Length: 470
Image (cartoon, rainbow, N blue to C red; front, top):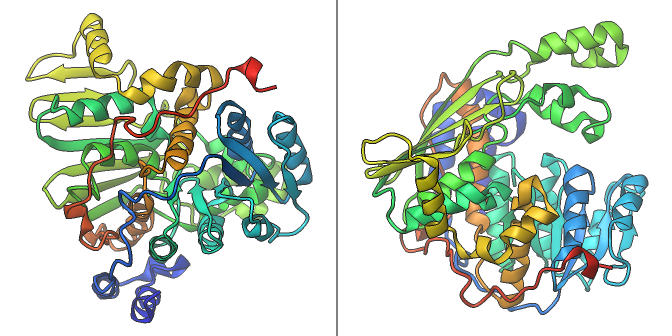
């Protein structure tokens, strides 16, 4: 990493908890330093050498990781060679989900850094990381340095410096670093992306996104997140901690990093009305929770507004505590039409009219359903994983690696979508000050090509029915 920029990053406070006291001038210095970055190699549109079989190792087999391991049974050309977790019982449970005739993984456990041994193996092409957030970047960087492609859970990074580490390592090693943003592969999101590509909405003006999910109880549950890691994140940071689920699909519609870029953002948070109260109530019954009382919990609702270079706007909300129904909003607004997924049912309107009736919605769906859904959509629903989007994401990743195709999400997407988290924290701490968003593409966004919705050159990876996995 460029030493001058590393110095600026540290001085700006955008590394770790020191960010909360960052000044406007300090942040400006970080942005100026970032401008000095010179792209070593453009990973957008990069075609890595094809792999007939994608030999994969999974680090972290909690809820997300175990589900990913199970899905591996249904994807042709994917072989699970290694599993790693600090909890032996989780590894054994995950291993039992694999078809023994196809997958006989070696197990790594018993030490906090056993994951490095998995990354060091010569028979691993792809490292799939589903660990707590603060471990994502150290693991991803090390894996790429060992010559492995990386698929990392969301968010890919939690500081601005970590985002740069991912970009620079991917460029240096020419190894893919894909953030596993599964919501980009949900059915309505893919439909609206294809509609936007074909001009249905006209010029895109505005998008709205969110992660609104009632996780208050699970964040305080002692058996839900290993070592209470997610509660600790909410206890030490104040901003949009989890922006990518809603943001990713909107960014793809707007061709962020591929014809447009995020320019600046502002962010505001409510105070905490709930988390400290719950901690106090639990501590009255169980002394274990006294350590979580009177802590600086993040505000229950965060709203972040992003302005792009082409003058578009994106709203991103984050609320995982209040009793609101689940929503990622997913609103796409253009000069000719609009789509909105939540609250359900998903709806589309054209011109200045009302929401289209069901029969017209069905006709639009038939006309604009993209190839990937036609290819594996039904199988995805059978295999599952958040309704099938997880399976389509994994299938597409493996198909691209097997055919030497560019990935739908590159390292610049991982960095740009993730950096909204720490930048929102900075803005909240500075009375919703306007914050520039770093250009991780170093200007290549002007010529990078949009995400392809065709399967040209790929689509050859088979899907295995349940009776074929044994």
